[in-house]
Length: 428
Image (cartoon, rainbow, N blue to C red; front, side, top):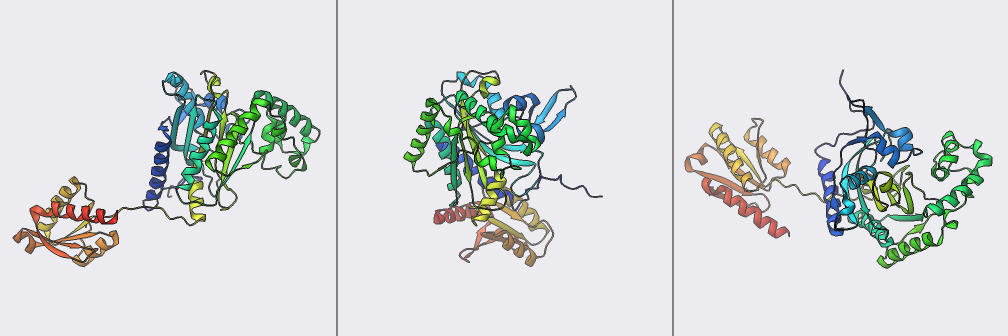
């Protein structure tokens, strides 16, 4: 019986891999412009990190984590999200003591969540995220949001909508929490079991419930914006002023709470073209208390995360084609055993000079080798047979111009390199 791929995962085949690499290159380029540096954290961490960092009442912790015991009976979890591991590293490596503050980081890697697979939602997902830690400046919130928007716009996506909200500071959230309990408590029996459990633990999470989203009490729930104290109001106003200054349009949505417990003050989501049940492309926000919860100082941070899988859906929805160039500079057609051996040597010399080169490995006839060169899209085809070997020459054809030239074998690598350089210059 054949073994099949686990549900909720996918193989990235060679024809799709260049698109994923293209996305990664875009992410790295935009982070370089904004002066964010890459960090890599382990694929698994102590389970306690996510219980403390993400929150006991979140769906991630309660339902979605891949947790296992190692041989030392330690509980470990495949990382379901990127912020808690980055903050753990920030604390453990004492980045708060670095000269350059805030510390601006980005990560690209696989996350794992046990949830129902659907379009744009898989059990192993590739995530790109940024974290800026060590400053409370609201203009940093706007910078992070602008980075996310610039990333999406770099692909040529036009159907984007930025939604923002403020969850306020601890004082504001406490007042709002009490109001939410008073609002939902008389009818909480009408809600799902998750919401019933959240009422006392974290009533704000009720607003994020997908099961009871149409319940009448959802529409009349107290707005966090009505409970913001002066400090929280000023922070949110400064964020909006910074976005206005950059000309980034947004909508304020008081029901936007996000799904993780560590958020406070600014939260945001970026929506994309309607490509199915899920339109949220990116989500993030400011977090306070997370660094200190994991043993660090009382500093806050802000970040976002997005998945490649949902970005690909948005690209398909807007019919955006990846900008991928993978030309084959030279294909050598070898005719005869002696030519075959010489072709192997010539391929090595071409590749040593940074020229992409290939030949036939399936013992095809001459006509079949030419067809293979055509399928590869070779820009130069070189033909080598017994007659050419005797004369120490090789026939080279520029497939773009149709020009053919007999070239001395010892000058062949330099000749092809010159063709490649001229071609690249003409395309710039």
